[in-house]
Length: 253
Image 1: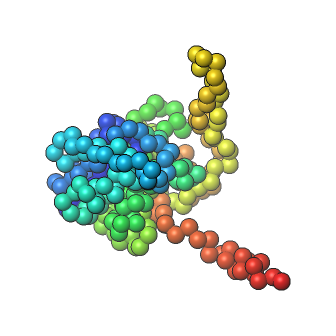
Image 2: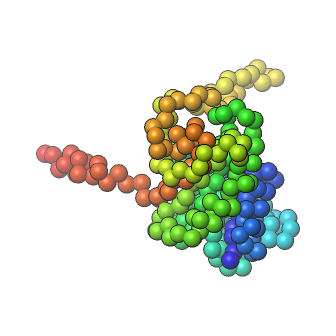
């Protein structure tokens, strides 16, 4: 069995080491193809205006000067000797739940794997909810078991899995929850304005730390309640229920 491991935090990220260990607990043929630099928040972007270069760092280990999506494409089309059986993306430093799904390039790498017809799983380690300090302990201890169980099932066309590990101690874990994508009831995105040494304004985008009140059964609720969240995502974004209303509106004289 061949596994492709990638991420969006970069080739030297600690979470990538955790994911490599998870992959090697499952298979001997593990390939790491990850971005040379951090690409958090890049979404499902491709490098179309710039050339892509990659460099071999070791046996079955490569860095790509590009996005996580670029990494999956390069791995499948150029670097690997054949198609992988599984794509694992992560383990991301920070959650990819609720609204994060639309920004996340950790999830985007798994999306690209899905588009290529490969079983794909995105994995992220929640932080900043329970105030225990950041640790990959839950992902490291439970990641292999979760991935093995997901591998045993059929995802179906256009489906990928989004896994988030809560930021608690492993002995505090309350189980695994199959969830739907949530929606935050507070806007966490902030713009921090600063001034450089030459008097010019510049800005940092960031996120506030607010809990909100998530609905039961969502990925947010699972994270707040110390549960591993497993959310099946689908690449088809069509809102089927709205189609008739749109059709009627367009047919109105």
